[in-house]
Length: 229
Length: 269
Image (cartoon, rainbow over all chains, first blue to last red; front, side, top):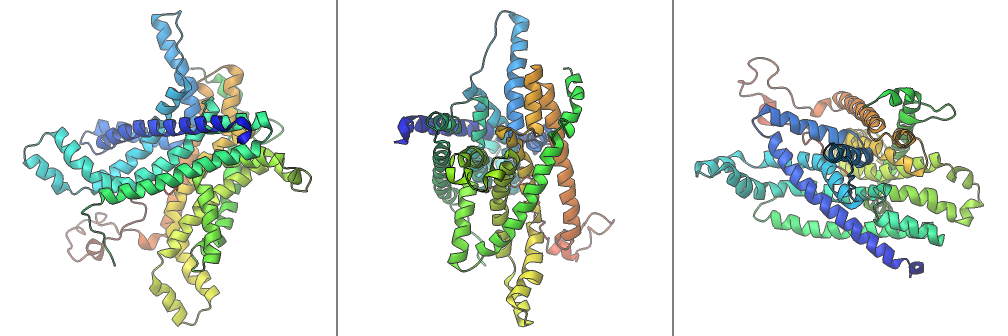
């Protein structure tokens, strides 16, 4: 099937999933830390977090990717050369893509998480402190589980955006779905077919994600009553 | 850092390479024609999408499902590289248009933004208070008048905050035009970066210009919201001294929640 390029498409789909999952993980960690910084009482932290989210969201992810990919590589080598002029390191495009997409979408997730943190009733946090819990315990055991319910809609949106955004990593020659589909298309002269197949795979991923996320939303909304008019 | 290479190519970055439009001007051009045709397409589609008839709403649902579920890059590639392969198209009058990267980019961006905009408008049509339409019907308005004078004016206003996000996403999406040979702002940055083997400066210039465009667009939308959404803006309670202590301030009892409180709310997908 697919003129012998079925395996290539499957490999591409797996790489796409890996990039999307990896960068989601990075983005969640960065986004959560940034959201905490945004709600901090120290003005310096708030300013840094605000600068990061503002910058990440002000320009296209594609241009950020190009800048951080090529610029980051060059900067890294310059730093390495200070210590060892003979050495040159090269970060493979998978690691770089995961890190860069994670950094960009961390800025978007920070806004989602910030909104969710604000939505948690302050009394819950105060009660935690009143029981003598440490700040880190309050954050991880009281704030985090309760904010997930408010963060989930935004998180699911960002996941879907991230899956689709991972297509741009084909421009820095990562062997993901779009890259392999276009290679297969050029080799077999069936470009239209292979791009449509790639589109179908993305559609399948987003559709299945929506089902799973609906289940997750149920799980985290347990015990929360919805307003019904 | 040596920004002289940017200054030497400033014409290329901002508006032209001598023969065609390039850089920032091309980006803004693509954005404005795509956003305009996207809205014109989205309006009737949104009315269909919100319709009770499944014959009207289901085809639109399929359209938005496909265009919101696949990457813009793939859509653009299908239109530019994919359709070029179909003999039926190559031999028809359509080929005059579809062989132009510019037209293909415009087509891809318009269809993409139309799908998202359609869902935004359909959502705000659905949340229209039923009483407004019942009142219009009670006044003897025709279906068309209800749509034209009651439903759409309100729904479009309420869609404005979400739509501002969509326009920013469209602006950022136009950066992909460089993937099909166009020299938009991202494309200029790429080509200058390659020509001078400069990994930083051209991209920084592009990032700054994109950032400025985003900022200007957001200001324009803020102005538009102040103009057309004034009736849902929360009244300032801290503006005049003493107004806070007044217990019977209606805005304090029924706080009107502005639609764009949640900064950066994602309306995509």
